[in-house]
Picture 1 (cartoon, rainbow, N blue to C red):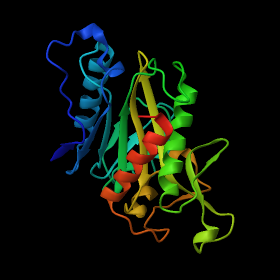
Picture 2 (picture 1 turned 180 degrees about the vertical axis):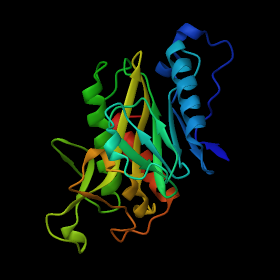
Picture 3 (picture 1 turned 135 degrees about the horizontal axis):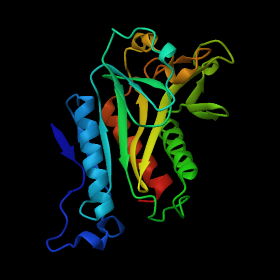
Picture 4 (picture 1 turned 120 degrees about the horizontal axis):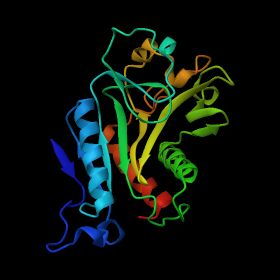
Length: 242
């Protein structure tokens, strides 16, 4: 079941070149059932094309996948440690291997980077990635979790020391991977709420073997996906101004 938080329909008579993403609110969609990866990619690509053509509003799509691995454009074959464990898909996004599965909130973001926003005054991919990182950091802050960036390591990281772990040990709590086609974004972020963390053992997550992965539940924050969705929405408004 998919629940839109904003209506996706455009007003009758909207012309393809009138760029509705400049005039209408971004659509938020939540899928309650697990979404197969190929279906999600097909939907993303179709929506990105429609956004580019001006026939659909921008979209943030919140969902979960069944257990699977995806390979980014920089993925190394040696980092797929257990190739028979779950289906593996070539994703077309940047980055290396990552895991998706139940208990992980995936947010696919389809927006037009040519549309000015706070912190995104022009089509700048690096600035966009920075805004996605800030979105995750502010989402985590609503649950009193300090998420941080690290030079040379993609994603959002947590020092386990304050949560009863070894001081100085850092685990990844959220991953990022984006693709941009004609300045419309695809893919997005994945926040570990309560996934089976043992599933990450089948890969070297994002090519980084010296650090682990964690989740909100593993840190002692027993939040639900609907609570995370509300936090994501509030943080989006703070970071992207809409």
